[in-house]
Structures are given as C-alpha cells and as structure tokens.
Amino acid sequence: MKIYLDADGAPWRDLVIERARWHGVTVVVVADYSHVLPLGKGVERVMVDDGRDAADFAIVNRVQEGDLVITQDVGLASLVLPKGAVVLSPRGYEFREDSIERQLAQRWSAQRIRRGGGRTHGPKPLSADDCARFLELLEQSITTLMRRPDEDRSVPG
Image 1 (spheres, rainbow, N blue to C red):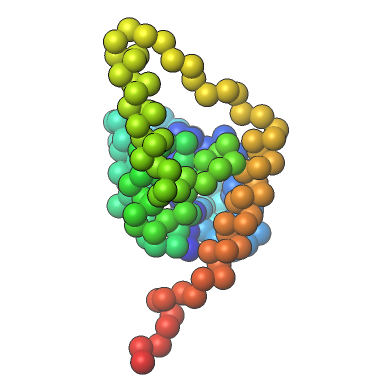
Image 2: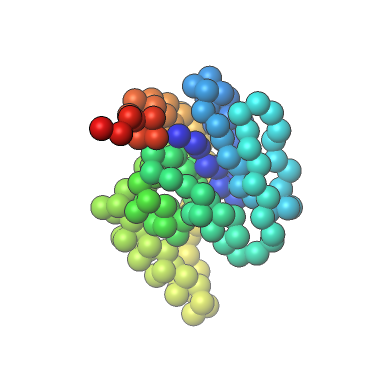
C-alpha cells in the first residue's frame, strides 16, 4: 500500500506524511516542477512537467489496487477508483464509485456555465472541522487498507 498525494490538492500534506510515517506507509507526492516538495524518510517525490493534468496522469499510471489517493480533483478520482484505489478529499469525505458520476456531471455543468460567461460559487475555505474529519477518515482508511491481505505475498497454491 502507498499513499499518493496530488500536490495540487494537498492542504494537509504534512499531516498526511506524519500519519503515514507512524504507520510505516510510503507517501508518493506528485507535482510539477513549480512545487517545493518535502523530503524525508517514507516520502517519494515524482516530478512531472508543467501541463494540464500531468500530475494526474502520473498518479493514474502508478496507482494500484489497495493504494490510497488524496486529491480534490473529481476527474482524477474517477480515473483511479476503477483501479481499486481508495480516494479521499481533503474536505474529509471519500470519493465513491456510486456517486462519482454525479460529481463529474456537477463539475461539467459548472464549467459550461463559466464558459458561457456565468459565475459559479467556488468551494468554501477549508475549516478546522474539515481537517478533523479528514484526519479521522485518513486514519480509518490506512488502518482498513493495512488489514487487507497482501496478494503479492501469498504463496501460490
């Protein structure tokens, strides 16, 4: 299990790294060259070229079943969910396959309104409650994923 952190949507990055270290889980921070990324034990950095969705595609290409992805990006979530990843939002909720289509439709609708010259409301600023909810969900997700049997270690029968 690895935790993939989309650096574009990582307001709680240091807290994620701290929790992952405590559990002995590697965090892979993926970003373009304009970001300053953390170094340290248990942290892998993946640098990608500037460009729309470059970090997202790097995550999609690396993620495996049983990995955890942290992102605010609904599009990225929709691409890694079918691969068996668990996807968390920094707002403290889990992206789920049974609701991702609705979230994508809402995003598309808002983009269409903006392209037509209309205005849409952006997300509210992150709050202490968001952080607390996120950390609780992060802990639950790590614990659950670590309990899964590691298929790579199973002895062929």
